[in-house]
Length: 165
Image (cartoon, rainbow, N blue to C red; front, side, top):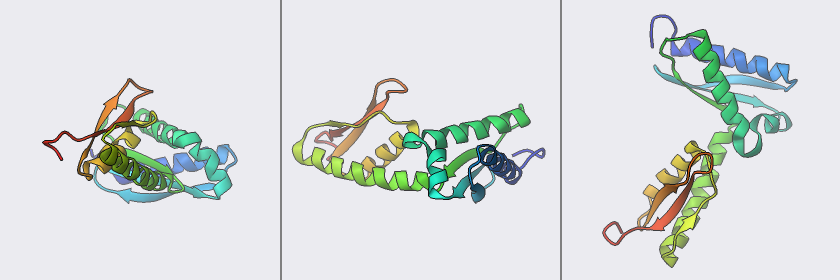
């Protein structure tokens, strides 16, 4: 980070921004710091489940949008200045999504290994695809490939070649 702004200061700005955004929508939620290091931070919006559902959106799309809007806010406040990597979560959605994806993909990978036939997953965002790739990398006998173009890019689980197994 530069002398102009630290990651901690940027984290505080994102917290204030998200608090204001939730208030503007009439949603009872409060932004809280989760993690911080020299070049990245995470902020989690916490509140009641009903309110958080609106902020999470279908398949977490609103969480992704909140993160992008937060990054844009920092870019506009500090044009041309290096900024910390921003991660926004709502009610721990990202952790729950990761756990659910890992469990689902582990089951699919086992089926691919047993049957020897590939299985394609639904299109997903880059963060979810990374979770799938990382999960399958830990499983012997199965590989992954990404196919398609954004926003329809998806992961396909394939039996590993005989040299990989």
